[in-house]
Image: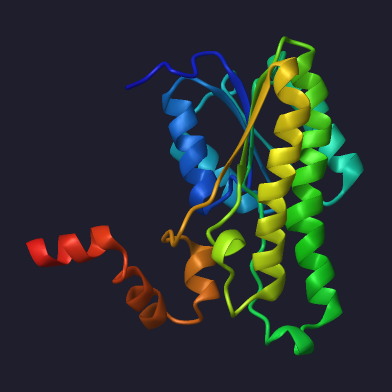
Length: 222
């Protein structure tokens, strides 16, 4: 199926790899004009290549989503480049393995919150006015099942992803009436570079995926 996002303009943060890259590719196939937003320039350039977009339909921006000035400029550059903003996907996040709560370094806590919560807040803050200027739009915040059930190997990540869920609920209650749909998805384990890194070993990643019902079913069919 193609054309569901024909001529829509989208920003995808975290577009240089993993889930963000897959979203960029799918949006492009569905006809959207996509701004790939990430600090990983080489990865963003690779995403653009994989999308097969043209200068008229795809571009990239180097952005640190915890920096208010750079986020505001990202939105402004997108509107200037493509004429409007219809969709924002907040996919950029960091996951740092930490010891139990008492031993968590405050620097790691702050770094995670700055990116995973403040970053989503800032992107919404500057994207919403650009959307309402054209009658509305759609924001999708990427949380995690870690924000619902918690994970023992990263206190900051789990708490930050719970924050994304509640930020989404509050923002939706405030801006749905202005035509901006704000939703959140909470993926489980997805085979991405970040996920493989967070489990500390390929073997641990594989053992975790073996518990997913679909994986169990597929293994039985072999």
